[in-house]
Image 1: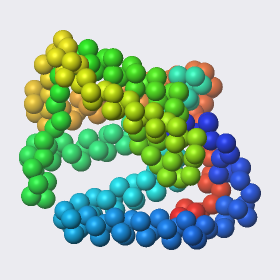
Image 2 (image 1 turned 180 degrees about the vertical axis):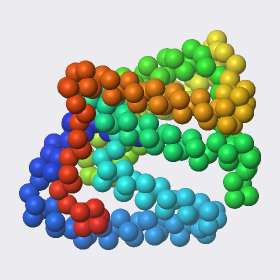
Image 3 (image 1 turned 180 degrees about the horizontal axis):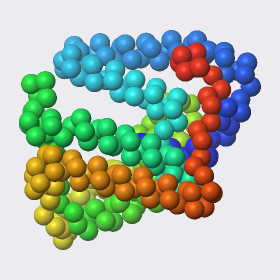
Length: 239
């Protein structure tokens, strides 16, 4: 979920009010036309479901951009500054998603569509890949989705990160069989071992422990929890 807020040249709160209040009509119209054209093409070439998913992706990009929600900066702020506001927001998101999807995964379907967990073994490929991914996120200022919505928001600097992300993906795909053959452990599903209620309870307990850890560290280092800054513009007017 994930861009580095500290690297933006100028935050929205610091921009002149007149500029923030002036909509970019041409950009908005062009983006709307591209979304409509893409949805129409997918509806004709594939089906209406893919067209709807395309529009959902566009809506998520708008929400992420205006919320400046990112995984990278939240982890960096907690490690470097001891501020856990971003991590607590992420844990809340994961808790809500877990509570919604746990019964659906147990049922094996949702709205007539088959549904199942993405289980995979944990081994050398995961350890090395996670390390490289973390380094890349910190150097590039965002992960995949964060890079995409910042590029979509007009950040030319993040275009270089996007090019590097694509190049790394192509290189990794070229020798992925070697990585998949590396030593690994069999996949483990807590939901399968404990049932969906036990699995959900254990996951929520783990999430709660992380939240308590962030609260403890932040209060120990700063004396109190950080209060979110008030938005400079109403959300509807910004949109």
